Image (cartoon, rainbow, N blue to C red; front, side, top):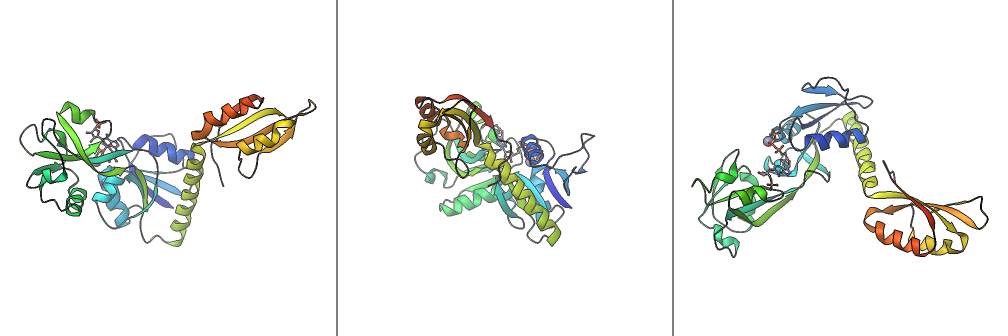
Length: 283
Ligand code: PRT
Ligand code: ZN
């Protein structure tokens, strides 16, 4: 049994549960308790505050966890980062009052910076040889300059609208963060095996996410040109149609190249193009 710590409520909760569900780690629909065994997979989910997840995994209270990279880096040591998960994206940035004239990081020398991420901030300042005072507060960091508690802040930014409504401007980004899968460094053989299976499944979900399955009908004369456009997993599948001289072609394409590929295929005289999402993909 692998115990996975995830955020109980908050920004990461829903997407974490979605990802786990797509990986076949489903929860019974009944009531939410602190610890719930998954259906059809040897794991149980432990619902925690995001701040507590890195430590819980480091201490072995949980075997693995899903948490923002910002929290993982702040609570240094212990757990091991396994994989980036592609959601919960944000950045950790320095912001200062809008009206300040800002040119370089040296602006921060001798200043007081409010943050909930003193460890990440202190690393960043050290790396850039800036000497500033760090004032740790646990919430509503963005109001600190307005009430005279600090000269600047170091906080999570996503759209930037919180900064704007507090008359602040983002001037430096220290970290681009997203949700990450972390694990305890000394799992036993059985837990290690379950974690490997989980990683395998998450990989399959992620690989499928930016791919589409495409089916189309084409005159046989243009098949060689289609093979140049459509890569497929090995190569496209070709099935003859009942109508003489025509085939059905099946392949997998990159979401990013979707419109480019469709344009080229239409120009070749293909018909009946169907594009369908792929749920899982094992390479
Ligand atoms: O209760 P618990 O301690 O578990 O939750 P929490 O309130 O500490 O965290 P939560 O749920 O707000 O965020 C969990 C994780 O989501 C963070 O650790 C980040 O990894 C990630 N994340 C992604 C964010 C944001 N985007 C985000 N925008 N976390 C916080 N914010 C805040 C930001 O601080 C700002 O004040 O949302 C506000 C709005 O941001 P703007 O720039 O869009 O205005
Ligand atoms: Zn928190």
